[in-house]
Image (cartoon, rainbow, N blue to C red):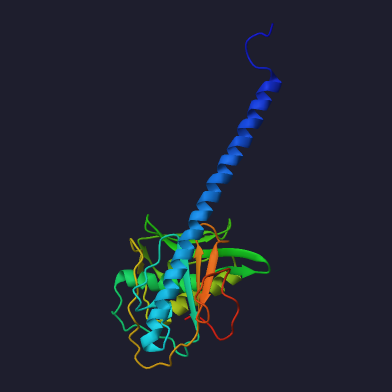
Length: 244
């Protein structure tokens, strides 16, 4: 007759079974989270591509940063827009409120993502957090969280070495070139951008729009002026398209 208690073998079996069940639960949870992220990204790029085409019909032009379209991105996604615009379109001093200024910086930041070098990916996206911080997602050692709610130019530092320093300088330069100003006040929500105030420019005739998941960098879609149906993957290399 067996005495009370578990044998070592039985304990090991229980531990193994629990571990297997935990792995299954985590895998299913992560899978459901990724599916939700994919749905969110797809709906954002579908909506953004639609407003780009609506904007283009009367104006024969594509706007930078989806400006003037009333598009507001969802939390948890990164948005980057590349066009063949011949001039950088700018905002007059004081024409952006604090939330719009912060949104302009976010567009500039995500246009520089991902930061990669020799097969390594250091940073993949930029987002504002509810805790009033700027998060530039990345690997261990390059993941950057900048405390807000006020962020000065000197506070914005990316940490993966020379390739990150180059990206950091470009983000700042592109932001300022469009009329953005420091300090940035971390907003409580995403907002749309008004049309730039520069009145003389050559129309942009082509674009590539890219929307990705902040949490799942592999979830990314793009749409173009030639085909606004979302396609899985990042924008293809095109020497005619650029940011800003």
